[in-house]
Image (cartoon, rainbow, N blue to C red; front, side, top):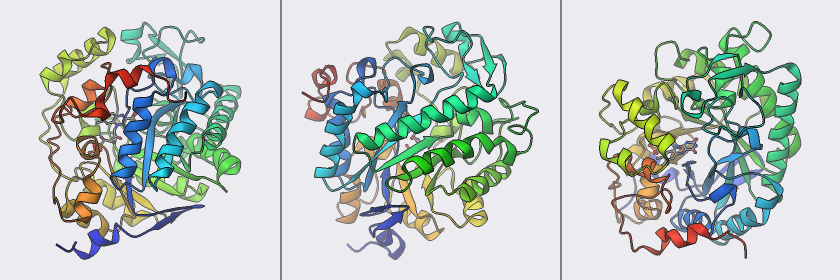
Length: 414
Ligand SMILES: Cc1cc2nc3c(=O)[nH]c(=O)nc-3n(C[C@H](O)[C@H](O)[C@H](O)COP(=O)(O)O)c2cc1C
């Protein structure tokens, strides 16, 4: 079976800044739950090696915290010096499979479940009540001062340099889903009256400054991408009109690629996934804090039926507004979906759940073995993130060596 023309183009190389990828498929950052106490595990290496072996041109290691106070969870990757040999084991494994590795660099801002931060009030664009802190007891956030802005930008630079030292080919600066930089973009979180608040372009100013600093530091050697929201998906949140302004600011600042996502962790998680979390999925969450938060969220969420390419309409508007490379993300799961995204002018296709379900999917599409992923967008993988075996698909067999929870207790290197 031959692929339709535009889908076939997804299998051709693309250059993003200093990096050339073998094709246009990128594995999305999906918090793996494979870094106990912040230390990358052997299971994390295997997870990404499988993505690379399955055909993705680049695989993204999720949610690497640039500082101790920038963490949301205890068990997310800490981008600190002790993690470097473990991350090097991961990038080596990915490179051996012919793919590139990207580190998603993040600061959670007020979106933290950790009561043990050094700051009493977690940082955000503006101060006031912190809805995410209801669970952790961090009920109030604090507005970042000019000194805070400079210090955290420095931390992003240090994080990017560490990613480079660990052998990564790209860094993705997380500016979506409600984390610190997203809190600047969002009109709900950003009430500042200085140059960092106001219009969408002004709210994008701090994220763009961080981008510029990271580009100056590593942009000649690494691709520097940004993950943004095409819509925050709730009343009072940033809209597609805002996203267009944000994209223009980031284009002017020189980003090598924008990954177009949407939705916010606290206000509209269903918008991130284009579907709801199943009730049964909440039962497997072992962390009582996350379990309670997820239960509470289910009380007010609207019911969203999944449809493929659920961000397409919003993302097309950004495609029309900027010339820079854009990656389509959101419910891509079939050859027809890839064809559509490429036809609409997107430069790359980013996939999360479809590749968790089957890391071989990209090769299977290419070889005509499959035309559609068996992922049902049930989101049970999201809940499994907090279990000892980490993120995986419930439809896969438990005896698959890639899911051995014992590997998740062993540090990647050594
Ligand atoms: C288990 C799981 C964990 C996720 N964790 C992250 C994360 O750490 N960082 C992030 O930017 N997005 C995260 N996401 C969102 C995905 O990157 C992606 O935006 C979303 O799943 C929609 O893409 P898809 O339809 O291809 O799955 C996660 C998604 C899943 C399913």
